[in-house]
Image 1 (tube, rainbow, N blue to C red):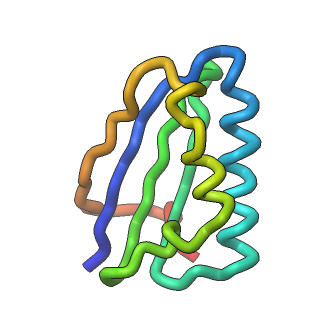
Image 2 (cartoon, rainbow, N blue to C red):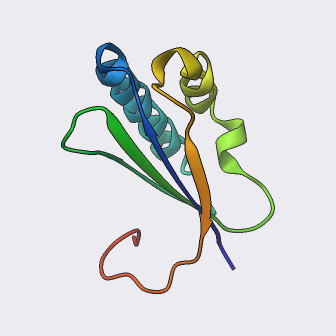
Image 3 (spheres, rainbow, N blue to C red):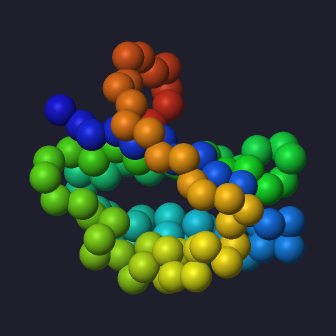
Length: 101
């Protein structure tokens, strides 16, 4: 069974584009590594400063822990944020063409 985590947060206006660049770098790194057991989606909301990440991890190992780009994303994140992130464990109850290969 997959562990699913949903994280929502807001960045400072001047940090939003940099945050997006770092997220895009994480996605490129994950695609290059083809980390099995991981599904990851990130969304930037229409207000331009709110982000939502949906992470599904199969098994005990966390493939994000091995990603240099994810480490870079986390480094200095508190300076980019406008308040604390809100992580929540979730249970997928259904999906239609979302988070699937």
